[in-house]
Image 1 (cartoon, rainbow, N blue to C red):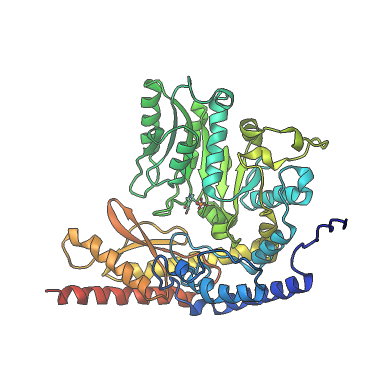
Image 2: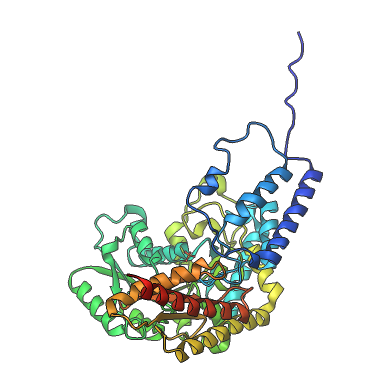
Length: 487
Ligand SMILES: Cc1ncc(COP(=O)(O)O)c(C=O)c1O
């Protein structure tokens, strides 16, 4: 009888092939960054085009990485929306720096899962360190401790989970049954992630009070006080207020100190959503525009938005992280370790596994230095001021909101009846985006269509903002001509 043959070790592809592919990927990444501006910001493709160009079933046999990279280059790279493009000024412009890209690559090579300190000592400690650097950059008190989540949506969800833990600790064991309905308060301009957090946490959309804002789009504290009074009288249990520092639509900054005073008086959790604008807080002159950050119980800032760290990287800073641990810590036997007094990152939310996101943040902060980051943010704000000036001087346009940082909201004011103005602006925006040179997005303010120019991409220079402004003015002319030519 012949011996059964020993199982054959296969493992990964040979290291020389891996090296060649990684070097090629590095080359592709650099070429992309170099020639990125040659692409149209928005690819000219229709839904389904990418899928149609790819085999519907997986390959049975191994394919060489060189062939896969060729397909990447031909089919994938050209068909993304180019967030790293200097003409990307939609939503909130973001960009991945070279240092951050290096961090991402090495993160994949290490493939660490820092569930507990033991399963990722350096990642755990680097995460708390990088967050503490950010805390210092934002001039926040030493008691704030941070950790990194994928997105601000998750960070705000965790903040509200901590608020729920503090106000209704029995929820952890018994769920919400038997608890008075919980309520959360945020400006009418707060991000939809607050609604999603309420859905996820069992608070319910109906119990998110969207508080009216004033003419500057800032939450009205008198309206907040009224809503709290009414809800308490109705037997509801208010747990938290969200103050947005840099709202997504108009970029307004809620009056955090007055909100904090109300929160302190009523024992409410104060969460500050500074997902985007918080990055500007590393410059003292812009930090002065956002007083009261230090009064928060929790604060979210996304380095993946305006600190040039590649997606995804959202820092949640908590004044008392114990509350979040009390909400989420559950340690199964297999994750018990002998170390005491260490941070086990799995205790800070529902997810167990976590990527080593701190590496790219740490590398980005070091590669620019605080001064380099400040200079870039100041440059973006200066570009926004310049654009706002051009808009203010052109009678065909009007600014739609104050522009304290790097977001400019405006609309065209053609000589048309009021009901035709929104459609004009919508078509104008389509024309601008169809040029492929810039990508802008929109919002509605006071019920009216508004175009947003969000400057914040590392690669955006003054010439790109001029290109955007030129495209906007040209689109105005073209849309006016089309209107005149219409039967
Ligand atoms: C103020 C604000 N908060 C939260 C978010 C959600 O960010 P994320 O995509 O990281 O969840 C955004 C997105 O633009 C935002 O502008």
